[in-house]
Amino acid sequence: MRNRGVWASAILAVALVCGLGNIANANILVVVDKSTQSMTVSVDGQWRWTWPVSTGVAGYDTPSGQEVVKDFIDGLQ
Image (cartoon, rainbow, N blue to C red; front, side, top):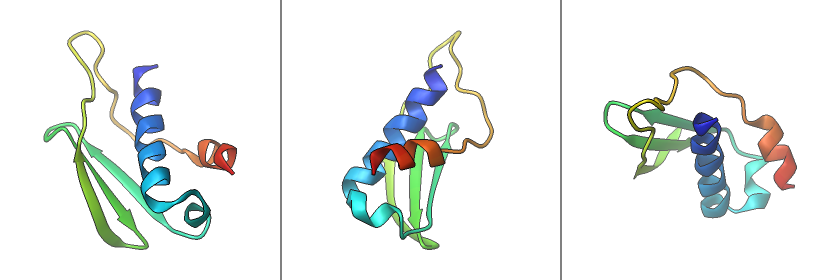
């Protein structure tokens, strides 16, 4: 469940920075790098931001892989 919180926070941050109206028209890629504890955001193939993130603590590791956040974005509109 902690993984969903990381992704929800990432998408909410992007939504607030980009403006909610722009999300539907932009190709947004969010990459969380656990080794550097950072999140990189690209919009339409161009790097925009890198932020520090916290991805887990002992016993609650954030799993690796891809997450689909379309439903979360649809819920913002």
